[in-house]
Length: 73
Image: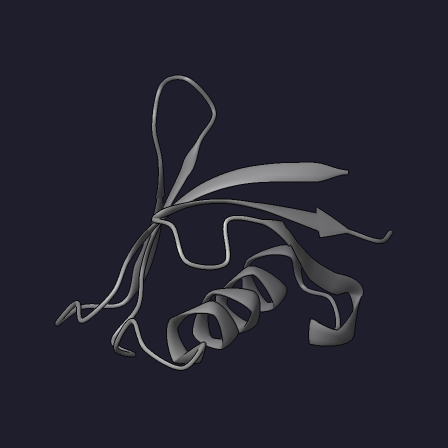
């Protein structure tokens, strides 16, 4: 399953908020450098879907706000 997300790094209150089009907006406290925000997003998705972080892979958008993650069920 592929999931489209929009990442908001350096947020004071980490959370996940879906919008009306099905895109998840993920707010993480990690900064957007050296992949720290991407790792935090993968961890947030793992908690949201209640699965292991190793089953979540970033497929597209490593340096972009808009990313596509693939979740192996």
